Image (tube, rainbow, N blue to C red):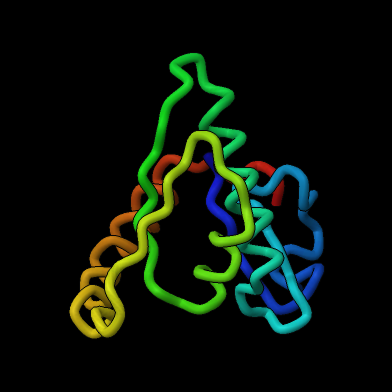
Length: 119
């Protein structure tokens, strides 16, 4: 699945000549340039649908931090293939340092696997 990237502008200068439908990410640009409840709800529903499309009809356990945007969105959406579990409150300081290695590894592997032909 393509990752989702949230940016500030509808058409970033770095991608001015790119076909936005062909870039290797789902690019979104809400007015606040932050994750919103509506955007997260849309992403959860899309993710759940994608997981359900696969031949194996998988069930997925999705761990999330306890951000208010995530909580309100997850409470308001019916998911068939995805169960959302939130980390306990006040654990961000313990789990966030783990993000650095995960994000760096993801970026390296994604860049290696992606051939951007749309730019």
